[in-house]
Image 1: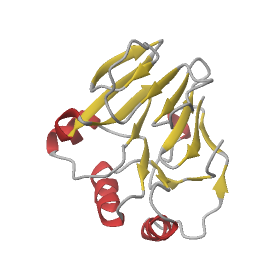
Image 2: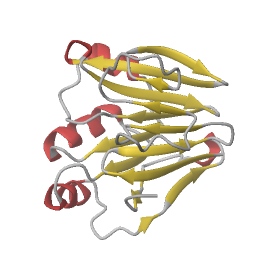
Image 3: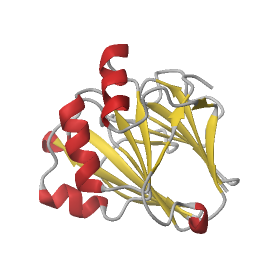
Amino acid sequence: MITYASLGGAAMEMQNGKKTLRIFPEKGAMKGADFALLSRPEEGEDDTVISWPGEYDIDGVSIRGIGHDGGKQVSYVIECDDIRGAFISSPLHEWNDNELELLGDVDVLCIPADDVKLAQKLIDEIDPRVLIPLPTKDKGTFDDLLKNVGAKGAETVNDYKIKSKSGLPAEGRDLVVLKAGK
C-alpha cells in the first residue's frame, strides 16, 4: 500500500510500508523520513538526500530525478508497487517533449498550484489517473485550479491510500485534495 500525505505547500510524504520519502520538504522537516527528495540540487555527503537529476533505486523504489532549467530545478517520478507517481517541483514551467518522455505514464500526479493555466496544460499533457493539486501560491490561485479541474468545494482528506494498481480508476480521473500538514 502506498500512502500520500501533504506536509504543507508543495511538500509531500509518500510511504510504501518499507520506506518513507519526503518530497520537497522544508529545511529541518526531514526527520522521520528514510529519504528526502529536494527540488534544488545540493552538494553534500548525506546519502539519504536526493537532489540531482538521475536514476536511483532504493529497496525496490525506483526514483527518477528530471532536471529543468539546466539542472537547477528537479522534479521526480517514483515507481513502487507498480504505481508511478510524479511530483512536479515549484515554480511550474513549460515541459519539453524530452522531459515529458522521461516522466512517462503517470498514475498519480502531485502538482503545485503556481499558475492555473500552466498547471492545466501539464495536467492535460500528463493525463494522470489521480490528481493531487498542491497549494503553493495563494488561496485564490489554488481555488482557481480546483475550479478548473472540477474540484471546487471538494472534501479534503488527511491522506490518500492506494493498495494496488487495480485500486486506480479504470476510466476518468480521481481528484484528491489533501489537508495541509501532517
